[in-house]
Image (cartoon, rainbow, N blue to C red):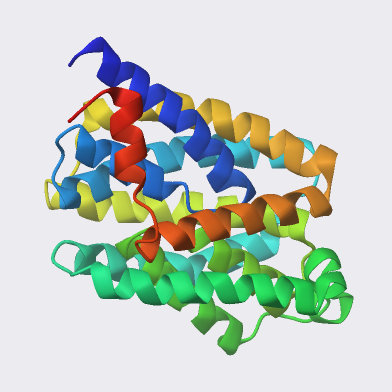
Length: 263
């Protein structure tokens, strides 16, 4: 492995860890870098899960130290997400991503509308929902999100945030904390499926994870210190950039090729 490849994996990992902790969508960068460095798409998809696990271990610890982690509900919501992720990861071994990515981009853009349509609800959460016990409808939603996360991981943070804030009642900061806990737990199981199917490059994944850990540490502290308004605007910017990439309005590959000086 060339030293430039190592630098690209670590530097991109910092951005990915930061973006994924505050919002989601950083996986697009990870997959693009892996593909540019020669990994097939199925192995790139599986390899990405290594960094996701390590960055979320860092984030969970930081959110716990800041006392914004709701462990009980987070662990309960992780159960259906884990079950869904195992199914999704198995489907990811042989699935066409292109049409599905376009649909996901549209859903992501719709999230911006909801954030502005009822901003106080999205920022502050809902105490009436938060006080209720979790029901089967909420569990089914997280099962579905787990399937998607197991398949692609790209943008799963947006769906988790929407479900946690609008469906469960958490404010955006606490929702971010539970989001990284759920992603951590279900990704461990999803990675196991990819390992079983021999779709993981450990060297690339562990090097990329170094940057992910740094980015996740910085973002998890900023999410609490800057507050929900800061997180909201980070999410909006990332949603726009991610959706534009998924809709082929621009190509991140071209930008990274210039940075990495590759043809």
